[in-house]
Length: 94
Length: 369
Image (cartoon, rainbow over all chains, first blue to last red; front, side, top):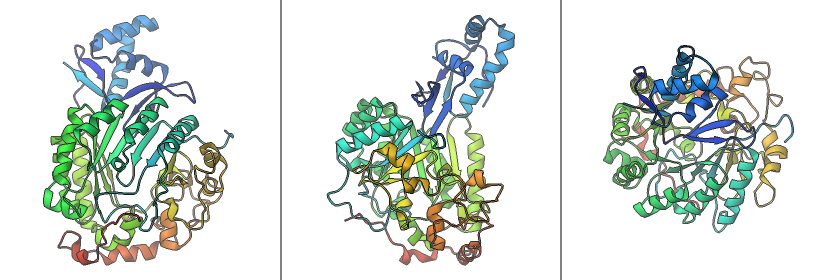
C-alpha cells in the first residue's frame, strides 16, 4: 500500500455504508463483517471521501471547517485514510 | 435494556437448512426436522425488525442455502428498511441473473459465496455435487452487478494444500474479502473430523502462505485465515462471548447464541413464536446461562484470559466433555486437553485421497426431513 498523494482523490468504497447508529446516535460505517464507530473527526473526513476532491482539497476544507492550518491537519487525515484503506474501505483515484 | 446486558451487533438468519450441496464439513445439525415448520415471511420480517430494535446492525442470510427460500428478496427489503447491513451467505446455487437483480433491487448489501476449492474436480468431490462451474459464473455476475464479493473456503485436509491457488482464484474473481476458515468441528464436521483435520505440517504451510498473501494484498483484498483450534493452546473467543454480540435464529425460529448451540441438550432455547426477541436476548435462561464470567469453572474463573477468550466454545465443551459448562478442551489448561491432543496426534502422517486415508468414512451432508 503506497502512501496517498496530495493530488489523489479518496473515495469511500461501495462496500461501506455510512449511517447513524439508532442506539447511540453516533455515525458508523458498516461493511462486510465489520463495523467502525466514527469519532467526529473521522466522520468529517469520511463525508469528504466522495472521489470528487483531492487529498489537498479535503485537507483545506477540513482546515477551514476546524479553524486549523492544513499543515496541522494533514498528518491526522492521512492516518485516518490509511486506516480506511487497510480495511479495504477506501479507493484512491488518480 | 438492563445495565449489564450488552446489545447484539449481528443477527444470523438461518432461513432454511435445505441445501443442494452435501459438504461433509457442514456445521448444521445432523438430525433435524423442519418439515412444515420453517418460519413464514411475516415471522422473519418481525424477527428482522426486532433484531434491529435491539441494536443489531448486520444480518447474514444463511442456512442451508438461503436461496431455497423464494421470499428472500422480501426479507432483504425488510432488513434494509430496518437499517440492517445485509449479507447473503450462499453456495450460489440458484443465483440466476433474475434472482441476483431482484436481490440488488431489494437492497442487498453484499454477497459471500462459498467455494470448496479452486479447481473443479476436487471442488465438486467435496461438495458432493456438480457446483463449481455454477459458482464461477455466479461470482462474475455478483461483481458485474456491483456487489462487494466475499469468497469463503472452508479448509480441511482435502483442500488446505490449495491455499495459494485459492487466493489466486479470489483475485481473478475480484473478491474484496477472502475467508480461509479451517473447519469448525460441529454437526456433520464433527462426525467427519478424523478425515477433515489437516495435519500439523499442512496447517503450518497454509498459515505461512495465507499470511504472505494477506500482506501482499493489504488494501486490495482482506484475507481472514482461521487456524484449527485443535492445534492451538488458547481457545477461540467463541462469538466474542455467549449472548454478548451475536444471535442466531434457526429455520424454525429457535433463538441461539451461536449457530450450533442447539446441540447443547442441557439448555432449552426459546422460540420467536413464543416470546419477543428482546425478552429472549435479555431475560431468557439460555442467553444468560454463560453470559459474563460468573458461570465459569476453574481453571477459567481465575484465569487472566477469561475476558479475552471467555472460556472458549460452549458447544465444543459439550461435544468433547459432555458438559457445556467446562473449559473448552482446545485450551491447554483444560483437564480434557490430553484426549484432544491424542486425537490430533492420531491423524498425523495421514495422506492420500481427497480426505486423507479416511475417504470411505466420510459422511456427506444430507437434507433435513
